Image (cartoon, rainbow, N blue to C red; front, side, top):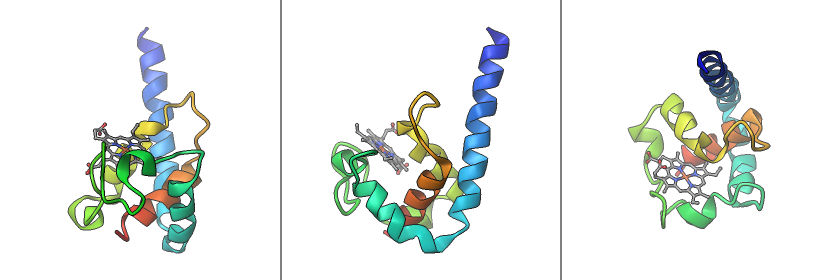
Length: 100
Ligand code: HEC
Protein backbone atom coordinates (compact mmCIF):
# COMPACT_ATOMS: atom_id res chain seq x y z
CA UNK A 1 0.00 0.00 0.00
CA UNK A 2 2.65 2.43 1.09
CA UNK A 3 4.81 1.95 -1.98
CA UNK A 4 1.79 2.31 -4.26
CA UNK A 5 0.95 5.67 -2.71
CA UNK A 6 4.57 6.76 -2.97
CA UNK A 7 4.65 5.75 -6.61
CA UNK A 8 1.45 7.72 -7.28
CA UNK A 9 2.94 10.83 -5.71
CA UNK A 10 6.11 10.35 -7.74
CA UNK A 11 4.19 10.01 -11.00
CA UNK A 12 2.13 13.12 -10.25
CA UNK A 13 5.18 15.22 -9.31
CA UNK A 14 7.07 14.20 -12.44
CA UNK A 15 3.99 15.13 -14.43
CA UNK A 16 3.72 18.57 -12.82
CA UNK A 17 7.45 19.23 -13.15
CA UNK A 18 7.55 18.41 -16.84
CA UNK A 19 4.38 20.40 -17.49
CA UNK A 20 6.08 23.33 -15.71
CA UNK A 21 8.95 23.11 -18.21
CA UNK A 22 6.49 23.40 -21.09
CA UNK A 23 4.68 26.27 -19.39
CA UNK A 24 7.95 28.23 -19.69
CA UNK A 25 7.32 28.46 -23.41
CA UNK A 26 4.72 31.23 -23.56
CA UNK A 27 4.33 31.02 -27.33
CA UNK A 28 2.24 27.90 -27.06
CA UNK A 29 -0.82 29.69 -25.61
CA UNK A 30 -2.59 29.55 -29.01
CA UNK A 31 -2.05 25.81 -29.12
CA UNK A 32 -3.33 25.67 -25.54
CA UNK A 33 -6.53 27.42 -26.58
CA UNK A 34 -7.11 24.81 -29.31
CA UNK A 35 -6.61 22.03 -26.79
CA UNK A 36 -8.85 23.76 -24.25
CA UNK A 37 -11.66 23.88 -26.82
CA UNK A 38 -10.85 20.46 -28.26
CA UNK A 39 -12.74 17.24 -27.91
CA UNK A 40 -9.93 15.43 -26.11
CA UNK A 41 -10.06 17.52 -22.92
CA UNK A 42 -13.38 19.36 -23.20
CA UNK A 43 -12.29 21.89 -20.58
CA UNK A 44 -14.75 24.39 -22.06
CA UNK A 45 -17.78 22.26 -21.19
CA UNK A 46 -17.34 23.16 -17.50
CA UNK A 47 -15.23 26.32 -17.65
CA UNK A 48 -16.87 28.14 -20.60
CA UNK A 49 -15.70 28.75 -24.17
CA UNK A 50 -13.86 31.91 -23.14
CA UNK A 51 -12.96 30.64 -19.69
CA UNK A 52 -15.84 32.65 -18.23
CA UNK A 53 -16.88 29.79 -15.97
CA UNK A 54 -19.96 27.62 -15.73
CA UNK A 55 -20.18 24.50 -13.65
CA UNK A 56 -16.46 25.02 -12.94
CA UNK A 57 -14.81 28.31 -11.88
CA UNK A 58 -13.96 31.17 -14.26
CA UNK A 59 -10.31 31.64 -15.28
CA UNK A 60 -10.48 35.41 -15.61
CA UNK A 61 -7.39 36.87 -13.96
CA UNK A 62 -6.11 33.46 -12.84
CA UNK A 63 -2.60 34.29 -14.11
CA UNK A 64 -2.46 37.27 -11.76
CA UNK A 65 -3.95 35.57 -8.74
CA UNK A 66 -2.19 32.21 -8.79
CA UNK A 67 1.29 30.89 -9.49
CA UNK A 68 2.01 28.74 -12.53
CA UNK A 69 2.60 25.76 -10.25
CA UNK A 70 -0.76 26.17 -8.54
CA UNK A 71 -2.59 26.41 -11.86
CA UNK A 72 -0.71 23.42 -13.26
CA UNK A 73 -1.59 21.32 -10.30
CA UNK A 74 -5.29 22.17 -10.56
CA UNK A 75 -5.37 21.95 -14.35
CA UNK A 76 -4.37 18.32 -14.03
CA UNK A 77 -7.61 17.49 -12.19
CA UNK A 78 -8.96 16.07 -15.45
CA UNK A 79 -5.76 14.11 -15.98
CA UNK A 80 -5.38 11.18 -13.64
CA UNK A 81 -2.33 9.07 -14.58
CA UNK A 82 -4.66 6.50 -16.11
CA UNK A 83 -6.00 8.96 -18.68
CA UNK A 84 -3.99 9.76 -21.77
CA UNK A 85 -2.67 13.14 -20.83
CA UNK A 86 0.51 14.74 -21.93
CA UNK A 87 2.46 17.33 -19.89
CA UNK A 88 3.21 19.32 -23.03
CA UNK A 89 -0.50 19.73 -23.71
CA UNK A 90 -1.36 20.69 -20.15
CA UNK A 91 1.55 23.17 -20.11
CA UNK A 92 0.12 24.80 -23.24
CA UNK A 93 -3.41 24.91 -21.82
CA UNK A 94 -2.12 26.56 -18.63
CA UNK A 95 -0.37 29.22 -20.73
CA UNK A 96 -3.64 29.93 -22.46
CA UNK A 97 -5.47 30.23 -19.12
CA UNK A 98 -2.84 32.72 -17.95
CA UNK A 99 -3.73 35.03 -20.84
CA UNK A 100 -7.40 35.28 -19.75
C1 HEC B 1 -16.59 17.99 -15.66
C2 HEC B 1 -16.36 19.42 -15.51
C3 HEC B 1 -14.93 19.94 -15.68
C4 HEC B 1 -14.09 19.78 -16.75
C5 HEC B 1 -14.34 19.02 -18.04
C6 HEC B 1 -12.87 20.50 -16.42
N1 HEC B 1 -12.99 21.10 -15.18
FE1 HEC B 1 -11.58 22.24 -14.26
N2 HEC B 1 -12.79 22.42 -12.61
C7 HEC B 1 -14.08 21.91 -12.50
C8 HEC B 1 -14.59 22.21 -11.18
C9 HEC B 1 -15.98 21.81 -10.65
C10 HEC B 1 -13.58 22.92 -10.49
C11 HEC B 1 -13.60 23.46 -9.04
C12 HEC B 1 -13.44 22.34 -8.05
C13 HEC B 1 -12.20 21.54 -8.27
O1 HEC B 1 -11.08 22.10 -8.20
O2 HEC B 1 -12.31 20.32 -8.55
C14 HEC B 1 -12.45 23.04 -11.44
C15 HEC B 1 -11.27 23.72 -11.15
C16 HEC B 1 -10.26 23.95 -12.08
C17 HEC B 1 -9.11 24.79 -11.85
C18 HEC B 1 -8.82 25.61 -10.57
C19 HEC B 1 -9.45 26.99 -10.77
C20 HEC B 1 -9.20 27.94 -9.63
O3 HEC B 1 -9.64 29.11 -9.76
O4 HEC B 1 -8.57 27.58 -8.64
C21 HEC B 1 -8.35 24.76 -12.98
C22 HEC B 1 -7.02 25.49 -13.24
C23 HEC B 1 -9.03 23.88 -13.92
N3 HEC B 1 -10.20 23.43 -13.34
C24 HEC B 1 -8.56 23.60 -15.19
C25 HEC B 1 -9.20 22.73 -16.08
C26 HEC B 1 -8.63 22.34 -17.36
C27 HEC B 1 -7.31 22.84 -17.92
C28 HEC B 1 -9.52 21.47 -17.93
C29 HEC B 1 -9.34 20.71 -19.22
C30 HEC B 1 -8.11 19.92 -19.32
C31 HEC B 1 -10.64 21.33 -17.01
N4 HEC B 1 -10.40 22.10 -15.89
C32 HEC B 1 -11.76 20.57 -17.25
C33 HEC B 1 -14.76 21.22 -13.49
C34 HEC B 1 -14.24 20.78 -14.70
